[in-house]
Image (cartoon, rainbow, N blue to C red):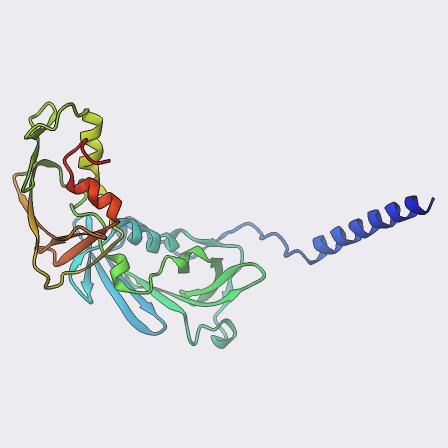
Length: 278
């Protein structure tokens, strides 16, 4: 009998705990009906980024490509820009009138985005709903944390991560020890390394064409250890300097004023002829 009462008591404790959890649980958000902007990503031409009141970067869209123009001029990473522009499509279940900046910590904002002429000011975080208060167009909206998380801490994080531009199609790679070329039908290597599948070639070329660097940084003054030349389908020729191969591969694109840093294992694959790296 005693054991039964203990079991029953434990059951009621669990029910009470569950009820308390449901009572304290934050209410589910209402339908997110308040759009924070009518601006579309395709219409954006300029983007300004600030962190804690200090200018971080200015970006500008030229044709179909984004460029940093401050604090340096260089191609921007399209993926990182798209993350910043995602706030244009944000919707919120709530909308507060602009009455007290300090209440939402908007008097000392964490970050600011100015997209074309529309400002987004990021203030306090609501730790219960896990949302952040964002001021734009004279209203305050609680939005998902991911919008502020997309804002980097330094401008270098916005630099393009790929050695070649998105529209570049390589047809020939000239290294000191070998050449990889496309002859309108297939990829080949000279001197021949033996039997190499076209899948191996495609993976190797894709790493050079669109592989994402660990980081991108302004060029430094170190001497190059090797030069690489890439001929593109449009006839242009890209000249690259190899600054180092270990422990990381650093590829300098002097014309852009940038160098791309790749993880050592990936760098080894990029510097070896297709099908020969292990």
